[in-house]
Image (cartoon, rainbow, N blue to C red; front, side, top):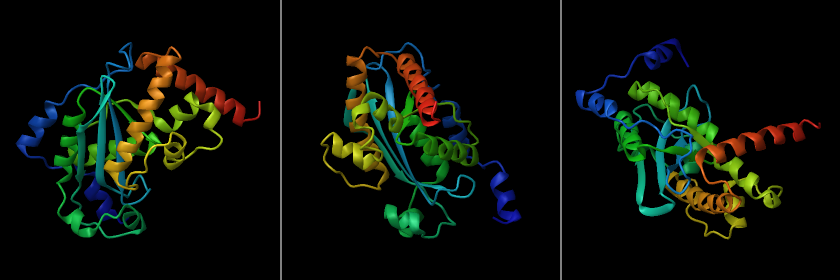
Length: 238
């Protein structure tokens, strides 16, 4: 990346008055607290990007599906392609089958991110390998909306082996977990389809968590933190 490009990206985004007003009216995120899992709004997010470089690559497509009060509704979804004027086709976009024409006809970035946050509302975000989506979304919001990401994230790729340890050795990818739970293979490497697939897996995970006595956001998060520490200890050979 040259210095001119770096300087351009460091400048605050220029927003319309309407976008500023919408940004200021956004809901506060859902805290990780005693809210019951079957009462929380959980938004499963998937982002398709121009690559895997957190500093250079951009979000091209957003897919999100909500589980609200324990219900996954086909009507409660968000999907859009983001307009990127400097976008060029790459290996990543060929994999996602996002054409330059679709990107050129996409929604302006500030409009796309506002739409996502308005759709998501007071929620906790979940994703498969959530760290990547969280970092990309944080950077996109800062760069294109002058907004600091405050929503909490949980990782479905961690929840699955924690709740189904008997399948952990055979399952690592989203496809693996779909096959394990005998879920129909939807169109993959598409943001909306991947979000839907992840949400279907999440419903199964939440059902097992509840049966095991984990019923609130805080309980699930604390259990996940403990599982993560124990996994680290085991992998370190202690």
